[in-house]
Picture 1 (cartoon, rainbow, N blue to C red):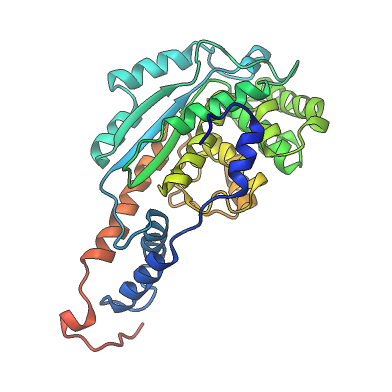
Picture 2 (picture 1 turned 60 degrees about the vertical axis):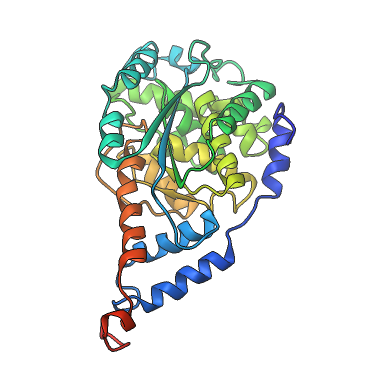
Length: 340
């Protein structure tokens, strides 16, 4: 594949994405029907086992090598006073990840997940989208290519997360650009803003999207004009995972907004993705409804950094364990019909 240098190359990739392996999914369904339980009794665990098989391209499914990739970026829109924390906190948090001091470090440890931290030109903020597009075409494509290159071979599951002061503003602007409505629909407290600061954040999203509305002709142009480098990198990782048949677990609001730009280009672009949790950021639930996705967990979290996606790995472990470890009717000597 030629190096990605423009968004048109990304559009070409999105036009022809591989689908799930029908044979592996059929094998999972056949196995599920033999297990000692009423049909459908394990609910979404059954669906997840089939989903994993289909996108991994083999049966039985696996969830042994799971990785969390956290992408960090900086946002020029923080100059508008939209965040409760200064932009330098992004770099400080990245150092915390590297030292093992953040929540995601603890969650990866207990889940047995590998953790990778990727700085997407953190020292170079995107442009303030109130004044000009956040990124030029080649800059956005470069960030997407970086995300694509970060996807390692041999993963069973890849969880995506992010860190970036100002990125809930970017996510709200992306959602506003994709789905219309207004800024108030998509803007939430982020790191904890309220009152006049929250009102200002809504204003910035409304005015920023209005400024670029005519130029935002598809999902990738929305990403370029009002998104951020870490959002672009996550979108690139989603594409690369699709090409490698690696199932994806998305994290919260910002991560899902990054994914949404791909579905806007190709409605099937997120078929290999599940959403780990629904964030307490109010726009996330609305975004999931727009994408017709239902999160695996709802714990009132709004931390980012892949925390909800990492927690959801335990559900994937449970799905695989039940699917592969349970006995069949024949093995258990149980009549083949169990009453509900």
